[in-house]
Length: 197
Image (cartoon, rainbow, N blue to C red; front, side, top):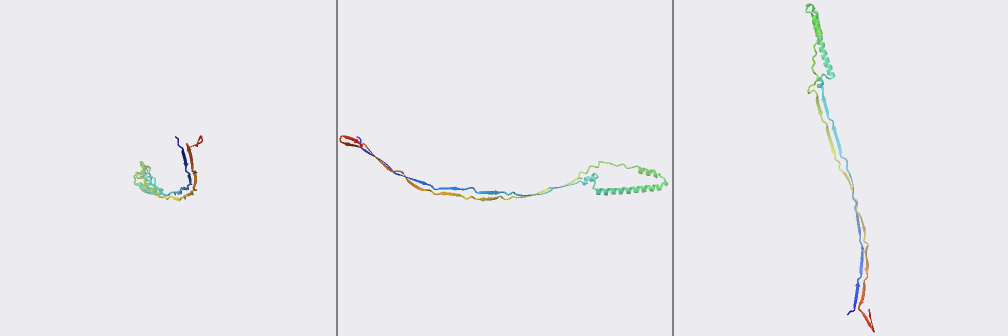
């Protein structure tokens, strides 16, 4: 047996809400920075070294002497030679004045004047070991250095804010409500006929 049925389907209404959010953007640029590094101040003072070589003793050892001293020495030697020659001539003159005394003074004088003494020569060109004197004053270097600090300029960059307000709230009907009624196994019985509703 089939019982009549009523089937009801109901759909509720749905409300849709749409919101437009506010927007905030932040831009922060890097700071501007400038750095200058001045060179260090550097001063260098140098006193030159001094080398003194005294070779006057070495030159004197080999017979080289300064001009003034050489002139004085030669003048003294010439004076000594002149005095010795004068004495010799006087002595020989005295001998000739007394020729009558005999003794053959002419032969003696001739022999004295005709013979020359032999020159003695030896290696005389080697100076003594301490003949050359050295005196050295070393150079002096004075350094003055002054470091300069860096110069730093910094300029901050301001932050940029951009704010957009929200567009509010939009409420709308997303789905309408509905009801559906359906009949099953419902029959209408009339005179000599039957009809399904």
